[in-house]
Length: 322
Image 1 (cartoon, rainbow, N blue to C red):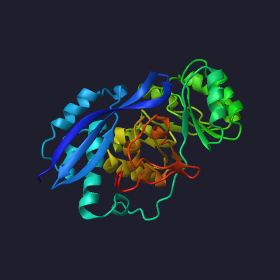
Image 2: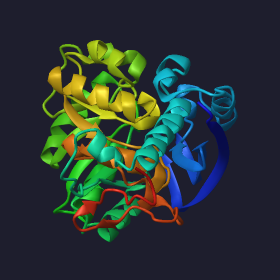
Image 3: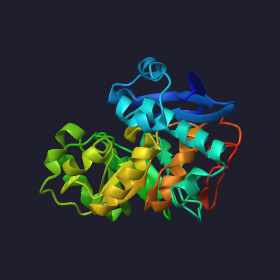
């Protein structure tokens, strides 16, 4: 096959400290994968995630151990996760460059459109979250990080700060079934359209038979197609993230299987650069909710970065990916 795979850690500073229920960060640490064949280079990026037992070192070791592998062999050689994601997306980019056929065309997408993306407000005290909401009230869709015992004042503050914005909420596994049931009527009252992963993935059996007055989206409970049977009767939406599925190849298969099973789609991301988001913008063409704001949270980004404007996040240019 004659390919060479290399991986390099890179750090992107965030525009401000970003906090969720599990902790805070001031920078995005990513791995950039480069696949070279006959002088042509394909690129991919992943974000190792400690919640799934990943680290920069462990994912680098996975990638370094691949050797001269083909794209077709990748799915059997590496489990779903960050390592396979970066390599899979780099293969897609490499093949597009070698064959002169854009990835969008290869997967049957002809009329790519910008997608309105959620903009995430970091978890903070209510007063600070209200200030964040006011600064971003012009954005059509806000995502609020919650998942603590004191969430209602935060949500009320955001609604005051951005009275016209659509709102989705991400609890990051921070609630119990009882807390969610108590909060749900208030979420509805404040116009929340979707709630992500209210319960820990290991305890989401408690959602069976629980009233779902607003749609619930599986995030930590949704990785690849094997997750779908477990999600039935608990969730209404699947949040597809490339770092969970192990790349665009499985993400496309999960998209089709989830739609066939009756789930709505959300396409999300870890906090990474435009290179990580680029393949997901293609995936988002079929999604009702898009959450690809990673580059908007950075103080710096890649060359040829994705374009964000009032129409949303635009498809990538070839100089970036695909």
